Image (cartoon, rainbow, N blue to C red; front, side, top):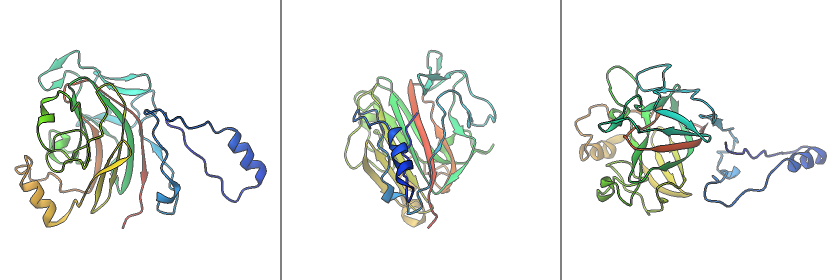
Length: 257
């Protein structure tokens, strides 16, 4: 679990000292996700909400199956883990994509991920979960999760780690090797999205309007009528048939513009 930093404002010195006494020093290790700077909190210091408690799947379910989680999804040392020992085609038996129980609009999402050797997965957002769509990627854009060193998709432009899958490539490759934790952030609003990877803003794009529709028309999603047509929805972690881990998943609401 991540550590929350408590900002104490306008309190007596005694309480300030007591709070400081409980604060642990921040580790510089790569697996430690840096706390966001207060000045970027839109002036309201909105608190973060955990989307994963490190012990069970509260708040998550298999896409299209409310209240259920496939047995291939497990908890491994405080992380969500996809066990692909019973792989079937491009997904896993008793796996499938999982999604949040709740839909979100205008938010900042942070998490850590690591991928197995030569693996592929993704973080899909603005997902519409209805009987009209068999998979989250039929409606939601994807932040690619990939082992860039050996997965076949790494040879395809706009299919590498951190990319807005098949639409926009990262500005600068900074993904860590398979088996190592990466820190990801998504800033999703009605009009603009940012992809961050390992502390660097990699992608900014407008998710409405004519230019966005032209981008979709030039992609593999051109024949999916409702792909990218929503600026809010559920958040999904993808089963692409490869081992993947996710942890320290948290979200906070942003003021709508």
